[in-house]
Image (tube, rainbow, N blue to C red; front, side):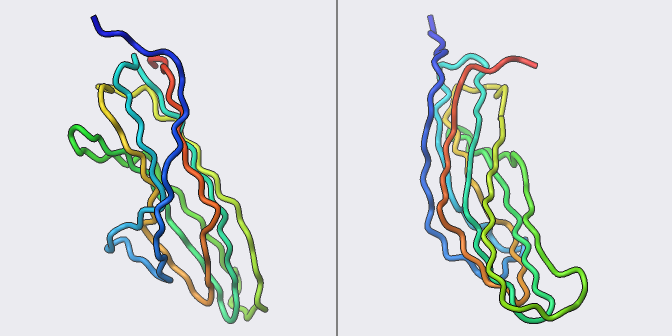
Length: 159
């Protein structure tokens, strides 16, 4: 007889040190920022509450400053290596009218939360990875700091 776990647990993940280019096309390989791996074996209809946070610092300067960063979260099965895109988010900032702006430093917190449940065929280990799939900048520099990633696993409810 196979026992089912019902006690929720928290799993902290790893921050991956990545060099971030000023530009990244969707034709380029994505940049992995952070990942967390959870073993769902023994959970009946498990659900995963995924959490990722960061501080995005950027400086705008000169004519027509712009910054766009497209993030996505993927889930990879350890058993099958199948990759599923969970969701995609876009951070964007720019001047509406073509103007020259003084140097302006901005700090933006970014928090991504996603509930992945229920997960079918869940007797597997899954890795959730935060990626950047596109970067567009013009007269803007940026840095990402204070990243955190975690997942809470619990018995989910069938929809």
